[in-house]
Image 1 (tube, rainbow, N blue to C red):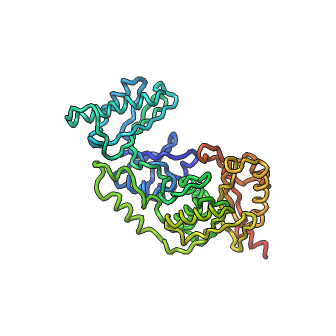
Image 2 (cartoon, rainbow, N blue to C red):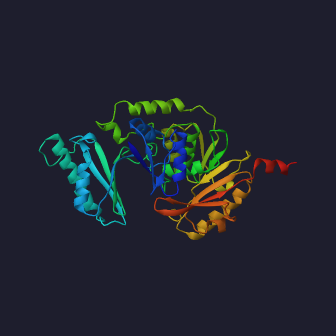
Image 3 (cartoon, rainbow, N blue to C red):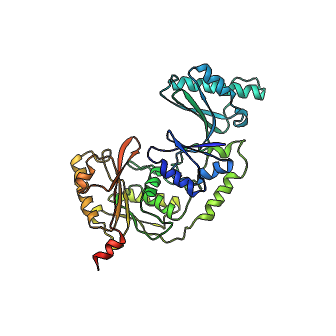
Length: 386
């Protein structure tokens, strides 16, 4: 099968590295999706192990279409009886960019009509409608410059829904984005599990939890459900084998140094609850603390933060003051590196230092910058004391 993995803008390289670490080599990226060949075992493994991909889709067909008739005929030609059951609950998910077929709702109706007709013809049921009381199957169609790609979503709920974050808190960071930022950083627990990690604006705990899951090699999808598990066409046991592989790789007893802090006691309470649900409650040191008081006697740590901005602090002057104080605190940690995600356009100015690197990312619908500040190298630190 051909598999497609949708990826958030700017994170294609991160996901390709994750795929490489899982043993997948050739995986070109185009139009926000990474494509690779695989079988049902790969469908299960990718859903269980991928930290920053959005979903795992099966590519069923690709064709040109400028009219509803062309769309209907091509959808009808797909062997849906091999993928869907007579009682499948079919949901349509479409989008169109720079194409004549721009009316998505109408296009989805035409496409679903073709699917139902095909199933009725092949099953010889004579029915023109389906009961749709069975397992959910999300059929996707993406139309780009009059070319249609038809997919079947094996994940169901997006891969960011790990299952541990059940309590609501203000402006949460998407789990897949948090994992990607960690992978973009110098935090490499696979080579140095005791390297310090800190988030001084941890909120409900997503960044420290994702860092701990990576350090302890806990697969993000090992404890959740996926749509493909309920399909008749999916072989028995594929999820169980992928989950067993994930459990074999875990290092839950590994010693790590991960800290999460927030000025809100409510946030810390929620963060601790989420960490326990994720199986890393023992691995993260959460505390109610003001960012300004953060200190560390351990050098060469990594600080990754999503500080309050815009949506969470409407007072611009308060944001400016926060950035100034944050910069002052960080400059007292010359050996540490920092990765700061914010949509505040004047962040560098008030932080008091131009970043060594800046990357454009999206947090929900906000355009953000990931500002990177590199700490002193170990050899430079040694020279200071010589």
